[in-house]
Length: 197
Image (cartoon, rainbow, N blue to C red; front, side):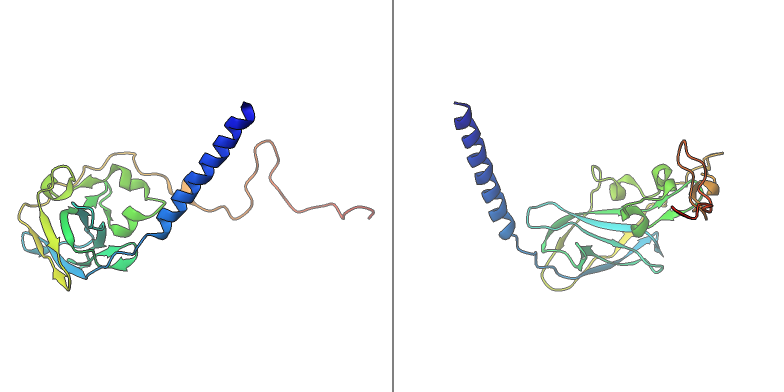
């Protein structure tokens, strides 16, 4: 009886693995079309903002870009320029830390995010920056797409500096010599000439 259950488990696992492998081979890269534009706040370019097109239907692709000093952006999906033709919800984010640092696309999307990002404040109104409250939508079509966004509301006030929130620089310095291991003395030059000497 026990060997029958074991055989069913092995056969079931093999069937699951077979189905899973077949699904991966059917993946087709989406056809992407260029999406560019400009972000302004009350007519002035907004540098270092993060623009996201979040798909609202199955054939869409999440596409993200950052604005340059002139407020211009170029969207990318999975390292490729463009987005698939579909309808999208538009999100624009502009986060500022308590020390005045603006957190751009690179700092928000890295694996090791900067310390200050966790206490940063979103300065764009929720109808632009909050996924649950965003009201702006666009349709990406085949060919070139240009979407300019002028945010009519002023930026929200920046966060107040928090006294003592800064992390001391010493915590992030790289030691010039090997650090001691708990319970062992600091490594130093060897005085032992080796065995038999």
